[in-house]
Length: 280
Image (cartoon, rainbow, N blue to C red; front, side, top):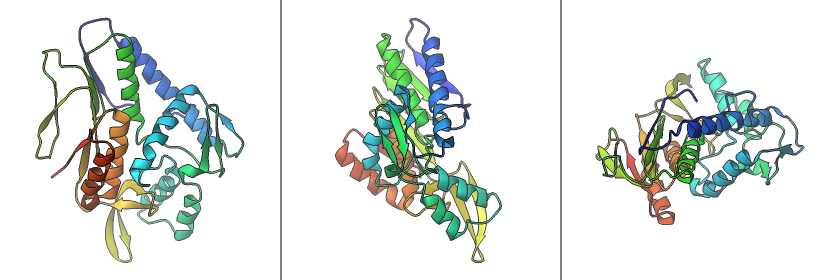
């Protein structure tokens, strides 16, 4: 929530109210780090009784649910218990025990949540949500949608590297976006979004069975283990909206360099408008 943002629009009424209202809504409902947010209160509630939710949270979870089948089990908004278990150990230069991992896994899985229009119900008391892997992209979508509702036809919204555009650049051309460390230094974007995920944000060096290993902050839900940092790697995905671009980029990154390209090619068959670039 502290990352700088940039909004470019055509001349017209100030969009400041739209920005402030959207960021306030996201902070109040979806910000994992705001201990008074709706998502934080849900996580703190260790109960299997239905938890009442707002229309804001319901809409977000409904949109995520639409895209989860595309991720082949490599993107899971309930991964927080595993993340906490691994990061606590890695910060102490060790790995968690198999018992600790097994205990955390019991509370991970989208199937552990029953969601309807008014409530979320946990099937396990320790289940929780961390929407950090896609909240930025969704926030950008909300801002662009609100701008369109208010008559804007040309705009670019960028926040922490995630971007969505409508219409054209103020000069009349398509929006031109730079992509670092790829064979395509720039692309032209119109009425589309891009998101980039990389594996260099956090890493820890740990000795395992006498061998040094570098682990990233990325947890693979299928293995319940963090991804090893072998080479610097990033994925940029273009999609019709920023939430989808965010989810697909994160999913491909977890799969690793060797499998990301084939995964995104498979996804293109379902959504032909997707494009992607991998760092060299």
